[in-house]
Length: 385
Length: 55
Image (cartoon, rainbow over all chains, first blue to last red; front, side, top):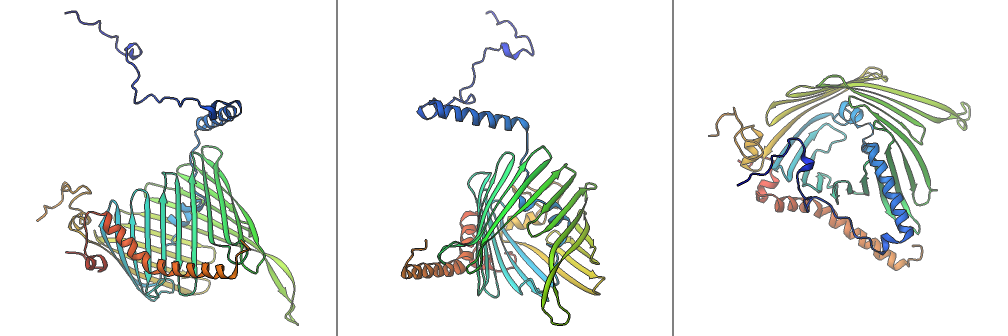
């Protein structure tokens, strides 16, 4: 029995292996549509362009909606701030797909209704959510992902006297994000009425992305209105700077920085230029307009501890505010929010409790930290009785 | 779309109003049904709607 000559190590190219049929992609056979001279020229140009685009290695810049998300939504507490007392009772029935209900009770707040019921269902490509409050006003939202990068969204809000429908289409390319949305579109008044917004954010280098957003709005009996805003975002991993020049004359610049593993800080400046009408002091008539410029700067920080999150911010209008979220038990968190306006001498305060409960026994054990998502006991956790 | 007759316009408005009412009262039950159908645990209605834990 003669053994084959040993292969020299490291010379895999000499291995006599045919390409695996499942891995090598067969090129589609050229048919009339791809082989005629015009189309093949167009295809060549397009694929050359696409190859070149791939070779630059640009990344998707995120959406315009999230342009300054790190500052205005993560670090600043505007989104989390509430007043009065509130209690959230969340109940999970399943984690994947996610299915949970929540009851929110609140007193002493202008923005949160006294009672609201919320239900959420989400799997890999569908997200559906609805909230109904004690006035029977409904807000519903549904997102459907056709692929990972093409997502359709619908939002519906029905209150007693008004209805709002928003349809949105999100397309995320390799190096750009395109978003088209329309608000209350209607043709019933004889002509189009509603709002249409189109926005595009394009990466121009590995870190810099620029974009613009165009808004066209037409309401019945009013003249149509169109506006374009320009945006830019520079993302250098541990710091992000972004700027927006809005058509109404506002300039928003923000800067976010990850100071350490747990600490993030952000600063935002808004400059609003506008026209203020001048009234005649004797007659009380409007005799002209003067340009006014208002500016507000806010600086804030967010610190994440193991069991709590602390946010604080101070702005140039004399407002100091803080928001603390502390997990006291695996299933109970306490929320505190407070704000003091030093210029107006006013203050606001909010206290809240969040309960996480479970609809099934396994979720309950998971919330207590006794089992993991697959139902296996967590090492080190006390034995389940 | 300016050539819609008054009658058909009225019909469309009526249709939109009806669909609005349906969406208003059926959206939450629909989402609850979606969740109930697609999760392994089939919680009963009281468990679904009560804020208290099941156990």
